[in-house]
Structure formats: structure tokens, C-alpha cells
Length: 193
Image (cartoon, rainbow, N blue to C red; front, side, top):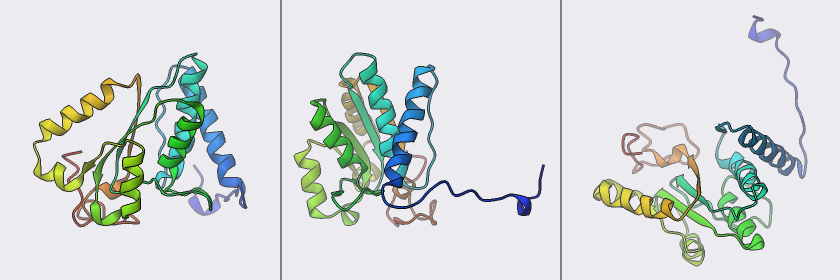
């Protein structure tokens, strides 16, 4: 029990490529957690941690000797399918996952829920279509029969052996999540999610 003022900050690294190293290390940690038959929960800022978490889960499934059939359910206002030729970010990870799956010849199953039309470019909608991504717009979730959306999610998950669920707080209305980097005035009520 030391006062907060007495604690020291330890910087573990910065610079080009360091983020990729951290993601690899996170992936190794998630893989080890799964090997021990535990349930990994990763909390992070934005979706910066997502690709590392995915790598760990994906590699764990490959090590079990089977083709990873990982269903990715993402509650988010954004597709996060941006190009990453200039480096990865919190907006690129689901495209990175798609590229890993393509390179390995494994299926890419991605189901974002809460997508905001005004928060994604036309090119991101086109990329989602190109990748065969089924998604639920926030406005459809708010106005639709929740039962039909749950049925779509159930059909999506039925084709997958394992599931990765992630929640980005910008999917919620700014009334509930005012401090996020991309607040959504038309976001979802947490009770729906």
C-alpha cells in the first residue's frame, strides 16, 4: 500500500515497429491462456488490442490441428476495415484479420453490429461487400425486430466453431458513452447490446 505519488512509471518501449511487437506478445499471452483452458478477456483503449487477441485465438485453433472457423462479432459504429499500408491502427484490424485468413486459405467470418452509415466511407462499405461481410446498421437494430437480428447472428455463429466477441464503446449513444473518440449521437442503448 504505497501512495500513488510514490509509484514510478516504466516505459517498456516506443518507436517504429514496437506496436507490432506488443501485438505479437499479446497474441502469445492469449494463446497460452487458451492452452491452459482459461477464458481470455482483453481490455484496451480502442480496438488497438484486437489484432493481437485475434492472433492468439487464431493460432491456438491452428495448433489444435484444425482449420480456424472463428466467428468475429464486433459491436461497433465502424467497420474498421481501413487499409494499413501506412501502419496498423484501431481502424485496420479487421482488414488485417481478413488478410491473414486469405493468406492461410482459412474462412473469414466477420459480423459487425451497430454500423453507422455516416461514420463509414463508401469505400469501407464496398470493402465489406467484397469480403462478404454481413452487418447490421445501428438504425436497423433500433427500428427492427430484435428477434430477426438475433436470428441472423445465430445463423452467422452456426457456421463457426469458435467465437471472438468485441465491443467498441463508440457503438453506444453519446448519452451513455460521451468520452469516446468518436461519439455517436445516434448510437445504441446499452440495453440492446
